[in-house]
Image (cartoon, rainbow, N blue to C red; front, side, top):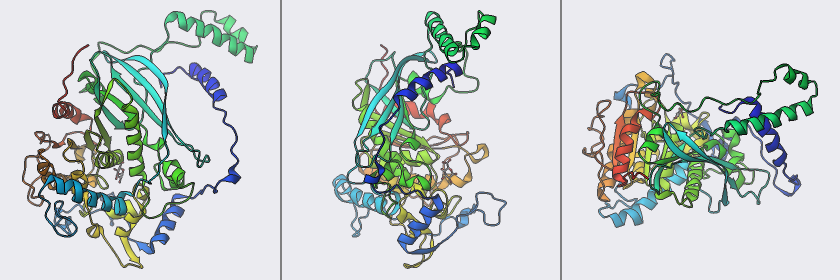
Length: 514
Ligand code: GCU
């Protein structure tokens, strides 16, 4: 927090006064469902006719029921569904067949069985710029904007969804610039602070306000006549190098002439099952629980990313045809879903995304289908996904091997747009749980679609069962599909110095100073 406490209080007071909303007559609307995560999960099982799900394995290797980490047992069904064979068994040999038949088939399967469908009618989002600030990030002058995307809730005012975003654009380059959209925690990078003269005025007004609310404070101020309750924070340090290693990913982006924006997924949809009757999913369902084919949080977050891209399309300093989408872990899964379904995203950086992201669903190594279907993570997926962890039900039992599609096909939906798959190493905290090998196999298996569409894959064969994952720090960076495992932990930051030149080259972007 960079705002001085007292100053924050002042802002809080004035915001509070504006935020008054007219009361809503809730009797006019379907009642809002308030369930626990467990109740919502049980309801979905019942809707699907499932009596019992297999439990997810433990992530702790000391536990008797720990996840499998034996490569010899990791591939119960090693043959993946062929990405270039249609449902009726025809081989896809032309881009036209891919776009017209195979891609729509895959989208249909992913929507129905895994991530859910975006409803036919989603409400409009109106973006407002709350703050526009001239700031410095390192030595780079930027324009930073804090924005809110208000989702139209006139059909169900009991739920309010306000998407939170910060956009930061370099001022020292000629625009329009490419932008990396990051899923995470938006914050203005270095809010500009008042000049000394302005600060003096603020202090005078603030002292007056305090004395008005409590006259005994006057004696205190009189005792310390030179004291100012609002002080300035130290400014950005222009000359000190970053404390360790590389500068931050955002600073690297700005230095390369890119802008970035950060959106907050949980302002679109809560990261838990109890929240499924709220957020954008709950708003469209008018506060009622999901049906099995309805979207999960990953798809909802990706929808929000698309709405943020709508806004970027209206920014003259942004080249909206050069917007990438980035995320790590659960947000890496969401970034991949955004990239796969919305072709306006020009590029994807998919960090440590694991199961539900780039890792093969069929693999039994680390996190399992059962973990996603039968734990506090099921809300990421459509309800139908639960079927693949079923032990007992009206339709028998099913496993990940029964999924009609797998993650190599999700990566293929990104083709031919540049897609970078990033991981760290287990020793530093990018746990084996994420199954780096399974992700590598999926990336290899997605290659033929990139080639078919005139792009380049990893530069290896498409034989996912024999290709070996490259050594750590050996990037496969010559194609539109790229892979690199860095020596850090559960983050993609150490890969940015490779991602940025790779991305700029693929987008044919060159920074031009202004
Ligand atoms: C858990 C979860 C992963 C997820 C990760 C995260 O480890 O099992 O699927 O990627 O949390 O988002 O940090």
